[in-house]
Image (cartoon, rainbow, N blue to C red; front, side):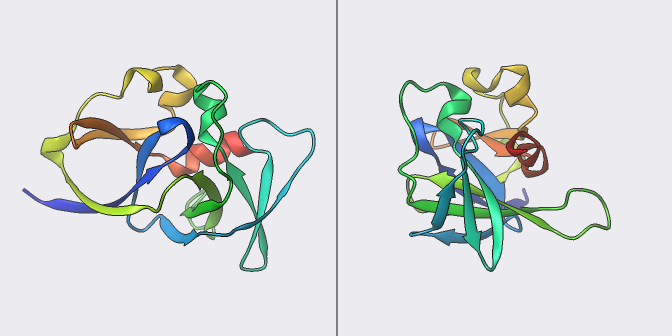
Amino acid sequence: MERYPAWLLSAAGGVTFAVTQHEMIEYLTHARCQRVPLTNPHCQYLALWRDRLVPVLDFAPLFARGKGTAQRASLSIVAYQPNPRQPLDYLGIWIDEAPSRITVSDDQACDLPPDWCDERLQKLALSCFLHAEQPVPILNVANLACISS
Protein backbone atom coordinates (compact mmCIF):
# COMPACT_ATOMS: atom_id res chain seq x y z
CA MET A 1 0.00 0.00 0.00
CA GLU A 2 1.28 3.45 -0.90
CA ARG A 3 2.30 5.76 1.95
CA TYR A 4 2.05 9.57 1.89
CA PRO A 5 4.23 12.02 3.83
CA ALA A 6 2.52 14.45 6.21
CA TRP A 7 3.25 16.66 9.21
CA LEU A 8 1.59 16.02 12.56
CA LEU A 9 0.88 19.20 14.54
CA SER A 10 -0.31 19.67 18.09
CA ALA A 11 -2.13 22.87 18.99
CA ALA A 12 -3.41 24.28 22.27
CA GLY A 13 -5.95 22.28 24.21
CA GLY A 14 -4.74 18.97 22.83
CA VAL A 15 -6.02 19.53 19.29
CA THR A 16 -3.97 17.30 16.97
CA PHE A 17 -4.17 17.45 13.18
CA ALA A 18 -2.06 16.90 10.08
CA VAL A 19 -1.14 18.84 6.97
CA THR A 20 0.28 17.45 3.77
CA GLN A 21 4.01 17.59 3.22
CA HIS A 22 3.86 20.38 0.64
CA GLU A 23 1.63 22.62 2.80
CA MET A 24 4.06 22.82 5.74
CA ILE A 25 6.49 25.63 4.94
CA GLU A 26 8.29 26.53 8.14
CA TYR A 27 8.36 25.99 11.90
CA LEU A 28 9.17 29.10 13.95
CA THR A 29 10.16 28.81 17.61
CA HIS A 30 10.13 32.55 18.32
CA ALA A 31 7.70 34.21 15.97
CA ARG A 32 7.35 37.99 15.79
CA CYS A 33 3.63 38.56 16.31
CA GLN A 34 1.35 41.45 17.11
CA ARG A 35 -2.13 41.28 18.58
CA VAL A 36 -4.83 42.93 16.47
CA PRO A 37 -7.65 44.60 18.47
CA LEU A 38 -11.31 43.77 17.85
CA THR A 39 -10.64 40.45 16.09
CA ASN A 40 -12.11 36.98 16.58
CA PRO A 41 -10.67 35.03 19.54
CA HIS A 42 -9.30 32.35 17.20
CA CYS A 43 -7.44 34.85 15.01
CA GLN A 44 -6.15 37.73 17.14
CA TYR A 45 -2.57 37.90 15.88
CA LEU A 46 -0.55 38.71 12.79
CA ALA A 47 2.95 37.35 12.35
CA LEU A 48 5.72 39.14 10.52
CA TRP A 49 7.21 36.38 8.38
CA ARG A 50 9.55 36.88 5.41
CA ASP A 51 8.56 40.55 5.06
CA ARG A 52 4.84 39.84 4.97
CA LEU A 53 2.01 39.85 7.49
CA VAL A 54 0.44 36.43 8.01
CA PRO A 55 -2.78 35.78 10.00
CA VAL A 56 -2.28 33.39 12.91
CA LEU A 57 -4.90 30.90 14.14
CA ASP A 58 -5.38 29.60 17.66
CA PHE A 59 -7.32 26.31 17.65
CA ALA A 60 -8.29 26.37 21.36
CA PRO A 61 -11.10 28.95 20.98
CA LEU A 62 -12.48 27.09 17.93
CA PHE A 63 -12.88 23.95 20.00
CA ALA A 64 -13.98 25.72 23.19
CA ARG A 65 -11.38 23.79 25.16
CA GLY A 66 -11.96 25.59 28.42
CA LYS A 67 -9.49 28.35 29.09
CA GLY A 68 -6.74 26.72 27.06
CA THR A 69 -4.89 28.95 24.66
CA ALA A 70 -1.74 28.42 22.71
CA GLN A 71 1.55 29.25 24.36
CA ARG A 72 1.98 31.81 21.59
CA ALA A 73 5.63 31.13 21.04
CA SER A 74 5.84 28.57 18.24
CA LEU A 75 4.17 28.77 14.86
CA SER A 76 3.76 26.51 11.90
CA ILE A 77 3.53 28.42 8.65
CA VAL A 78 1.38 26.63 6.10
CA ALA A 79 0.72 27.45 2.45
CA TYR A 80 -2.41 27.17 0.37
CA GLN A 81 -3.64 28.29 -3.03
CA PRO A 82 -6.85 30.35 -2.69
CA ASN A 83 -7.95 29.61 -6.27
CA PRO A 84 -6.45 27.86 -9.29
CA ARG A 85 -3.70 29.84 -11.04
CA GLN A 86 -3.28 32.21 -8.11
CA PRO A 87 -0.09 32.59 -6.08
CA LEU A 88 0.26 30.80 -2.77
CA ASP A 89 -0.94 32.45 0.40
CA TYR A 90 0.22 31.70 3.94
CA LEU A 91 -1.24 31.16 7.36
CA GLY A 92 0.30 30.70 10.80
CA ILE A 93 -0.99 28.21 13.35
CA TRP A 94 -0.01 28.40 17.03
CA ILE A 95 1.38 25.03 18.06
CA ASP A 96 2.58 23.75 21.41
CA GLU A 97 5.32 21.41 20.24
CA ALA A 98 7.51 20.87 17.21
CA PRO A 99 5.78 19.25 14.21
CA SER A 100 6.67 15.64 13.54
CA ARG A 101 6.96 14.03 10.18
CA ILE A 102 4.85 10.93 9.61
CA THR A 103 3.60 8.80 6.74
CA VAL A 104 -0.04 7.88 6.21
CA SER A 105 -1.75 5.23 4.10
CA ASP A 106 -5.33 4.74 2.99
CA ASP A 107 -5.82 1.79 5.34
CA GLN A 108 -5.53 4.24 8.29
CA ALA A 109 -8.69 6.15 7.25
CA CYS A 110 -11.30 6.67 9.97
CA ASP A 111 -14.19 8.94 10.97
CA LEU A 112 -13.61 12.41 12.38
CA PRO A 113 -13.34 12.61 16.17
CA PRO A 114 -16.55 13.76 17.94
CA ASP A 115 -15.22 17.26 18.67
CA TRP A 116 -14.78 17.86 14.90
CA CYS A 117 -18.40 16.96 14.09
CA ASP A 118 -19.70 20.53 14.36
CA GLU A 119 -20.66 21.65 10.82
CA ARG A 120 -18.22 24.58 10.86
CA LEU A 121 -15.32 22.38 11.98
CA GLN A 122 -16.12 19.58 9.51
CA LYS A 123 -15.32 22.00 6.68
CA LEU A 124 -11.79 22.30 8.08
CA ALA A 125 -11.00 18.61 7.58
CA LEU A 126 -10.35 16.90 4.26
CA SER A 127 -10.25 13.47 5.83
CA CYS A 128 -9.12 11.65 8.96
CA PHE A 129 -6.75 8.79 9.82
CA LEU A 130 -5.70 6.80 12.86
CA HIS A 131 -2.25 7.50 14.28
CA ALA A 132 -1.13 5.94 17.55
CA GLU A 133 -4.75 4.77 18.01
CA GLN A 134 -6.05 8.37 17.88
CA PRO A 135 -8.08 9.95 15.04
CA VAL A 136 -6.14 12.75 13.32
CA PRO A 137 -7.96 15.11 10.93
CA ILE A 138 -6.12 16.28 7.81
CA LEU A 139 -6.64 20.04 7.53
CA ASN A 140 -8.20 21.68 4.54
CA VAL A 141 -5.85 24.68 4.78
CA ALA A 142 -7.74 26.75 2.19
CA ASN A 143 -10.96 26.45 4.25
CA LEU A 144 -8.99 27.17 7.41
CA ALA A 145 -7.88 30.42 5.82
CA CYS A 146 -11.53 31.40 5.32
CA ILE A 147 -12.21 31.42 9.06
CA SER A 148 -9.16 33.62 9.67
CA SER A 149 -10.68 36.44 7.65
